Length: 371
Image (cartoon, rainbow, N blue to C red; front, side, top):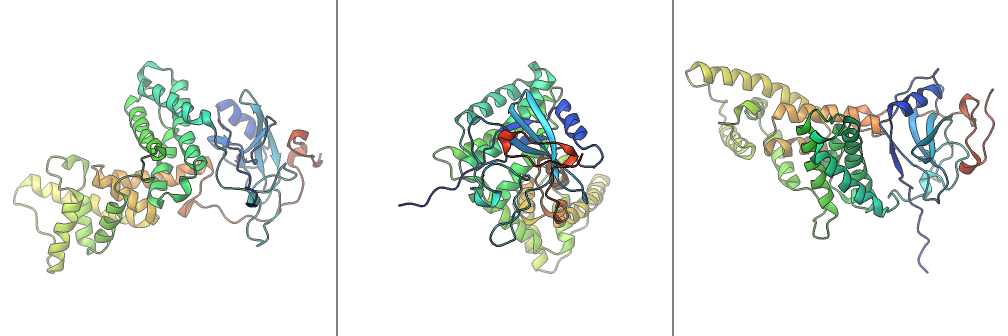
């Protein structure tokens, strides 16, 4: 008899509107904490009863978090609650839910989300809105950007593709999440670019898909070759990958090969040609190349590979690296912590409900909090 399947995470998702954001702040106004841009139900799969998702982590030493609870997206209640406090058998995996939550703790469930046949349809509808962003109202475009990016991430997890994706492809998905909140109806190019990148992600669950984005392995080899170059050659190569060099810009793979060949002979980068334009370009290459090299080195390795992939496909080098660094900070707004944006370790919290609130019985038996 096969072992019982571990329950999956519910995964119902709602965007955080300005009104909901205000309610999350009002639930515990005396403790700082930034509201998230989207809320996903973090309970295990359940019936039509109330959903619950973390909307605002609270700063220490008070701890706990504000949770959004809803049956329909039109009726959302925010409650300040302390953590569950339970740990797995190895004592290293704390439950990420609130105290007295219904269902099993997070360390006893499947990491995949529940499969939802409507999710792919909602993504397709969002892409249609983004394709005609110039004909849409601002709120509709913003909602479509949220659904296109966030639901695509959810669908990758529900189809169990996410866990097998190369780390550089996960970095690419995270960058999509970071861009979702910045899409506006007045900037149709941004909506179009996001829609195109999301569409590429959705092809990962096509039956014929290799389950990975193209050019990842090539970018990893390019990054390895770039890292082996002397710093001055790295600066020259990356500086030459500027947007304004599109007319005479050497492809990144050719530039790295050319630099490696000359560096192996002990040669220094050649001087600029004897004219004003060439000298200006050379100085600009050195300036931007040095900045790009420094910032690229600080990124997590998977993000470095994705940045090199984007540069090789024609993106301005400094822009690709800067966007990656910005994205790592922006995705905190979705509860994703990577590299340098990771929060400090948690300390145990008292097993009580904060702010005197009680979570409805449908979410488990409440424990009285302080008045």
